[in-house]
Amino acid sequence: MAASFKAIISLVLCLMMAVSVRSQLSSTFYDTTCPNVSSIVRGVMQQALQSDDRAGAKIIRLHFHDCFVDGCDGSVLLEDQDGITSELGAPGNGGITGFNIVDDIKTAVENVCPGVVSCADILAIASRDAVTLASGQGWTVQLGRRDSRTANLQGATNRLPSPFESLSEIQTKFTDVGLNDGTDVVALSGAHTFGRSRCMFFSGRLSNNTNADSPIDPTYASELSQSCQSGGNTFVNLDPTTPNTFDRNYFTNLQNNRGLLRSDQVLFSTDGASTISIVNSFASSESAFADAFAQSMIRMGDLDPKTGTTGEIRTNCRRLN
Image (cartoon, rainbow, N blue to C red; front, side, top):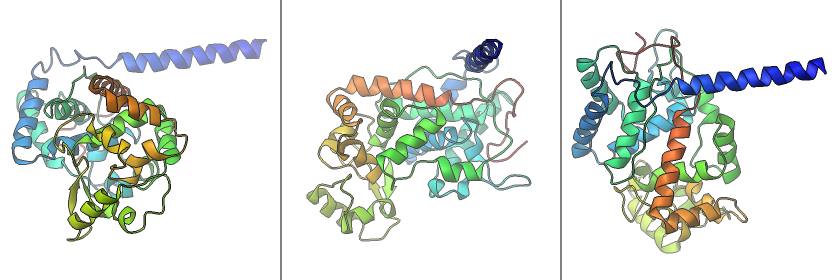
């Protein structure tokens, strides 16, 4: 009985600690120390999109890849340096870009509020702006994260989902970090409603589509083959219908076997997949997708944040202070 009581007390204390960490994130965190941070970030994102229509997709990918490795702590931004082996060498981070946009945002924020706003929070705010500036629905970003003083190459290698993976492999990686294997998987995959992918990440599906779990429309496959004639580094729209708009068309594409990556199409085409009904729901309702995406982004942003005195506020997002 005593052992059982001790176990219950231990569980309660763990839950209280988890709630305490989450409670340290707040939408008003910078209200007194950097009240204009949101408008500064949005302004730089607007400028970035004027010259690069992929800017929003680049930022969301950085935020996603950051949060999946030891929580949202800016570790994905660190380059190789003394004591740091960058996560950028992980296969899942191949071709990841957008660092120049983060640099520009950080510079603008530092000019107004030096040493106050973390790089991890900049990614969170900019990701919301990436969606709203592409005609998507926003959400209230929770803030107060601090930046990691370490990187985790092994974690990035093992935890980041791959465009070549099966549904079960993707779902396992989501549940391993604390997200769910249904709505979170489908909603966050919906970020592929804008942005581009290199041909190397899907060309195998065009010439040898042996994966029964990810069929591809023959006409679409032919169009993609034509687009990829210049080689594997050629970029193709993830959403062939509205490539620069954040909308539900990603899901209607899946219904028509026009998901670009295997990891996209498996959400709808795996026999008996638990995700099919969610895809159908999002395909039929813009608001259902928008609401779910917002909630999943908030949950993802809440993964193991560093707060209080843990970590640091980097002045250069690519290097330790």
